[in-house]
Length: 240
Length: 240
DNA sequence: CGAGTTAGTCGTACAGTGTGCGAGTCAATC
DNA sequence: GATTGACTCGCACACTGTACGACTAACTCG
Image: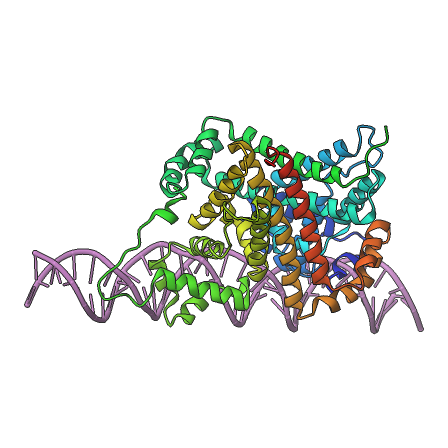
């Protein structure tokens, strides 16, 4: 019965209670954003809400469920594509891909939390996103099967890459270093470890003097284009 | 200096010590496979090795580092592509993609651990894999830039999808249910939540009576083909 | 109005976590 | 024989998630 997270109605009384599920989720989100995932404990969250740690358990079954709620809340920040986007399906899908990535980089704890369990069964926000993507591709002429494949491939790619990117970002902020500095410092280590792997050394060298953020942006865009090319090839030819 | 995990030489004495780093990593791997990530504590790991929990800290700086070592060890199970594969680059890349997915599904804790931090800086095994993929694409005629893009896109897609798949698998084994049973049971909940999203309801309905494993296999293959199509379009046309 | 029910909060307690520290052991070397 | 260095380990600390039962305060019913 894992789905009852989303089904269970919220109990309510008259004089509104001091704590509410929305409040708790919002506070958890704020704590995650400002201090990272390892800082989120029920006690700290309670303290932030001027409440006892165990009071939270009235509104939320356990920590895992709370995290699922937070994850879905953040999914709500993603801009769903507009199936009637006048710029065409491709531009809309692209925008959506970038939006997913932006949200995952903005909340760099999202990747790990999704992998931990959030992924497995999606909440309403994730469903809304999936529905919108399916609709987008179908409107572009895809069969339901193609739309499904396109959606899964797009999401798989975007989330895979963004998860890796955010892992890197978390490591940097934890080290309190700028991405540029870090690349410079890491380079000497990488040269040693990667020594038997000339193409990797070369790859590092090629990006050595670039702004790492731009490199990442470009790299993401490259793969996104590649995936969307693949999608386009599976759609009926556009009417002239 | 995050890279010193891979650089630090192992201390050794004459009469070989009761514990070794390899042993610890192997035991941790076994524990992860058999009981999952939440069962891996330093105390339990120590007990499994007939050693005190804190003895491990002689061989390993901390738990995080241990996990990084385990992750890289498992990466070693992935079959690197053979750049001279007589079946062509596409078949080789495909095989590699399937191998990555197989390893991630076999060790369903891998996705989360990679997202947590492993991803950020790769160990030798991950480097070997990257090098092999770069070599494969370059041998197929790609420029270093295209090879880089292809590698990142392929890995991003495969790891993204496989992480999502393994999250589902973990949830199932935790619930002690068969994937088929679960789909059947979840269906009634999903119908409620997804009710405003007709395409998702439809998607569920389409797969309702299939073997979920085959559905997943097919879906993965679909996206892999799509990505490789995109890669092919970026390679020079094959000589006749 | 009084009694009972229910929603909501919280303190305490328990079993567990990662790991710093210092004390111990034992083989190799001087 | 003394000393060094490689290891092992028990204890302690601060911290975790959460079960449980006690408590308060508001609402409902007779």
